[in-house]
Length: 111
Length: 113
Image (tube, rainbow over all chains, first blue to last red; front, side, top):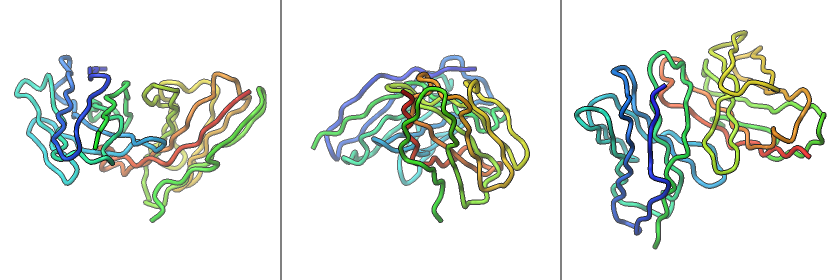
């Protein structure tokens, strides 16, 4: 299975943008890029996913490199509630919903 | 909608005891799964189900049994608890048409002494 590489942690000031990188150099053509986040003492929460084109939703934006070997999750204005572990996960159609979580990136937001 | 609910929230067992972790969802989702999360690590898939009567193993199935008699419920059974099963357990569900968006429960924190 294709794997992802993320930084262990990132810090941001409140109300500033946060750019979370993810490398996935062995991604296959049918792998979707998913992002989930896990707030303290809670279960993971879906954030966004995409295949080739950049994606936006109410929570975040996902920028995918042209060669698809990396992507960046963008939180446009970080709030204290965005402090969480963010997971970048690859999943293809044959995965039947099976998510392979790595260690993720711990985002710290300071007031 | 209550979403995905899990009971109990906390549980302490002695080695060798058995118990069942409950998971229920009210979204009529076909797909349900169980994960465990050890301290400082990501989640690992234990078992999953694509519908009533259908289950399959995930990455770390040993020591756990599951069954799926209804769409709503997906219990996880520990037959003989071991200290290595001390972990936080999360249940998740999704529509089979959209397994991209999975909904997770709040978790059960299990300690095996």
